[in-house]
Length: 266
Image (cartoon, rainbow, N blue to C red; front, side):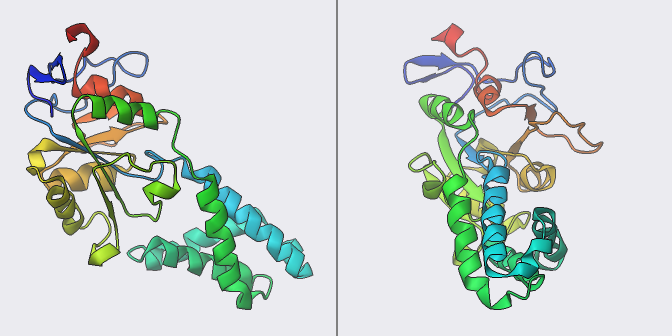
């Protein structure tokens, strides 16, 4: 764990924010500096640690190819149609398990070519391809290694079904939480963050949540008493009224935010 000037595995690590420097320099500290004791960093999964979009596209391409093999009518169905079917069903099912939402989207896609009876096979095809292609972003594993070396406990807590062991992240975390397992509701339900605190075994104020969603990974964790770091890979403007404890463009900037100038104090 990190405290202001505590010895951690032979290093003296001063905890504090980096100077505001925008994208060209140090990560931007959007709110107050991250000061005081921090013991645990908990990560969102999809689009934070995991590059999900190519995997989902690959799964949908596999489904579309099989649809076209099974029915001439599927020649009129496009990849854009399959992608839009997720959005068409998501609103009514947003609180449901991700796998259930995906099956509903696939059912809508298959109905376009009168292939409704093939839902189970197509769902299996989609998920097999999706998991085979899901991999961490290039900055994920180096960041996790650096934080673990600093003595921080690492957690994994997600709304999705990207299981760490199936996505190149096996053995990286002290604990893992998945929405809808053991009745756990999805983010931004307060019970989700309460479960994070319980799993971490530390006070909420000693936990930092890291993710790409302002609503789920910044605003809601802060309401639950956690710190929150916004991963803003695209550098989009931050809306008024939202103040993460820190904002970074890449996961490899996290060590610099959580322990300023580690190597200079080794």
